[in-house]
Length: 481
Image (spheres, rainbow, N blue to C red):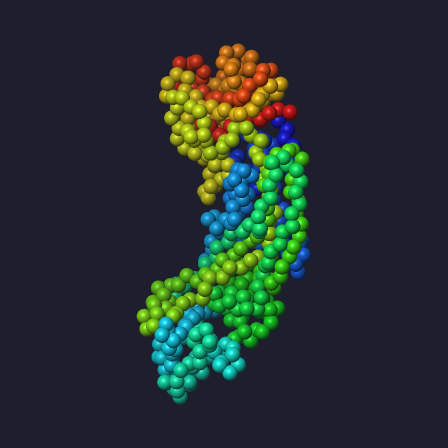
């Protein structure tokens, strides 16, 4: 079969197994479709690019392979800015506590020590603000109770931004029941993609930032319900990230490794030696973390709001990982475009009923799907017209077929102006379709000028006078070099 120049990327083993189960007669050597998607993974260490060996996948196992969720024709349509719509989601318990941030009322009023204690005496600790030091600090339940007993009508100190307190409920308390941390992992495109219509090499410099500084590490710890912020005594980024990672690894199977913030800049080269149009780019792993409140916690927040305070759970936190993926998508040289998405709007047809659908990659259930074609009367067909001049070239048209009831079907390959089905720029081949998947093909050599080449499938045979149905998968038309 046609040899195609350029990089051909092996498809994941899981995909091979799924694919083989759908099309059992394919041999291992031929059952992996030629992907034309190339990926290389790297991580940033102290701002320097370190390529990841294929045998050391590290945290990329958090997310599905990027190539499985990008549009197959991205080379033409462009790379998506992110893959949020296909994010991987995980949920887990809060690490230590659930925190409610309380901000001043819309009229500017704060909260008294008596109000703080009376409404929240089942909390286990509080974060308060020190007006003299201009910083937050951690206060025990006993300390707040003491201040409320001594000065019930005095105002709780408030920051210039209106922060009054963070009320913390232990994860094992009744108030925290049902409250979870949700993780959504996805890919984000770094800068703009690069593309070229003839495969020529392009080198582009990319740059981005990753990791956390001390301030964002504190924000992250609040979202997770982890005492690792300044108020807990962690005043340097090394200690803060260590504490987060130490607890994180125990709490969440999908936990990312948190690194100190840094930036990087490096050059990446894209291109192919086959002259195929391509698009390429660099993606970064992103983890979005948010608190999903249980009923009791949501009720607590609502009660505070009803009394006029601006109350909320810790905000969502987006973590920019130090793991990246370089990707390049070359144009699929299959002349039967949209072969993975055949429908009656992108093919020619006559006397055909079509049901089902097929995908280039497995869906979330591992299913590739198939299309059912029924010829409802004599000479029912589907075809694909390709705008190429086949003069002095040889082409192969192949397709996978099976049928519930064995019968004959016909493959045809012809050029414009030729309709004799006589082997002179119009080639016809009738095949026996059984209830097992088989790949059938027809080859044609062309010696006349034409504006187009057309591949046709007759599910019940050409000029047979019969009706019948077949299942079809992966039609392909290639120029043979």
